[in-house]
Length: 630
Ligand code: MIC
Ligand code: SF4
Image 1 (cartoon, rainbow, N blue to C red):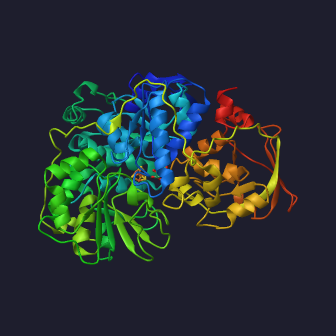
Image 2 (image 1 turned 60 degrees about the vertical axis):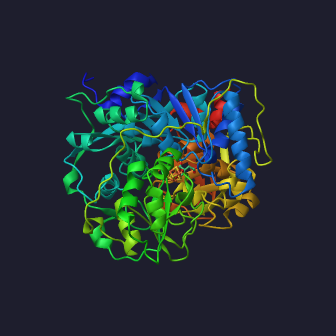
Image 3 (image 1 turned 120 degrees about the horizontal axis):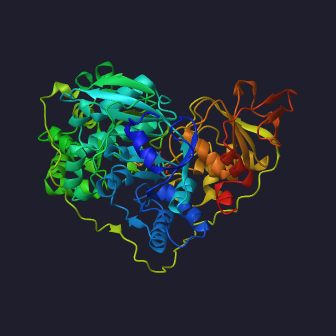
């Protein structure tokens, strides 16, 4: 192959241990340097790691974060935290306490290293790409295997080059860049691709701005997104007192890419993703004037120090509109401490804004759930129906600048209508790692509250699968549709029998009961089935209800892997021909000629699938854990 490599190819070349990465589409196995888990996917991931029977974590670094349920609305979450803390200490991982902030923000502040691979049990793990890492989101079982020193398997990606030129003007920010890319490419535009940012415009973006862009590559369906590691990266790492972690890294001059798009940052305008999809993007001028009831600033997308400082400068001497609730959620405790020390929080609260603990909070409806018909403008990354905890609320996504301007005006507003305001990246960050607990290499006892339900042994897949189509759904079903996040379920993530009762809760409240009564069956979906979060509960909980296979037109990457790892067969076919309630028989005797017999119509069709040898072996074993210990 060409000796000139792009950045993605360089990292793959250093980490690929199985398969030929030079051919996009090939299954490859890569070595994972760093792993992260968070509290809502982490309890399962750690139970799964434990079931592998090892004594210690084998990846260079593993960090267990506590952010999604950090407010412990229910005692079960506190049980989960005690479990996570003890199991991290037992197996040699770092534990980040509740209140320390969102995993992605802390990880790039304190641990990310350019050129390393990071696998995280959260779909926004690619945030780390802003530091020049190849950072990938995956289900808990894949992370458990990686923590055990196993390879992570993926399709060798196509690399999409995004060439940036120019500089952003006042009122326009990194969020508008990624919203513009979502407008152009849609939520499926990144599937099986890694997006690599290059060009002179890269130098005008700080590391936190880069992470906003790589964070929302997840909404494009991309495997990951990555920026070069350059002088800006060096300055950021130095300001975090981690200059020694810097390594210069970028594409070779004549590197090749499968695709390319160009963006002149001068031409970027403030954007808003209107309800109910991150790609329903409009220029702010097209939607300005829409009355707003709630504004949320923060999250792993836009929770950095400079951004919240900027919001406070925009609010200085002003008041939040009387019709608006303004909620500010710093991405991390470091951000919170700096904002407290420099007086920014005073300014925000003087203006009538409310500050909450660093963590995920409103982003997944853990508090500040908007009311029926209310419009919530948020700097988060997802706005599917129901995402904020109420399916009758309207959620829209925007930058900190648009959010702050709109909070003052009470309606969606263009920040360029107010005089330019600056906030700069600090030359040094306030460092206090006291909420990171480093393992003490002691044989500690693992604390298991009643909420920590042991995982079941995976059992061999039968050659014939029979059952009813228990539900037929349309295109773009997200994992939030399959298993909603938020206060209903968030405390049940380590309790599969209980959380399974909420499968498809908002789409069909009787689904779970029906599935149990019929002793399981099949789900039929449309395109991009399972887009969104990495939560493997969207596969594990249907498995708990007896779901044997999902038939869809196409699957989102992480969910497809989660189905396979859980022992549910993902099959691709033209699903328009099926009706809910029909009885199917799936003949898996020969995985290279899977037959689907419809007992109602008498028709037999061949199902396609793109399962590799390894994936077929996992399915036959009953799931990846059974396969790993075979
Ligand atoms: C999300 O943003 O959807 C979540 C909640 O962080 C999920 C993880 C989860 O469901 O626990 C994700 O992105 O993977
Ligand atoms: Fe947390 Fe929201 Fe980020 Fe997911 S997207 S990690 S819920 S802040």
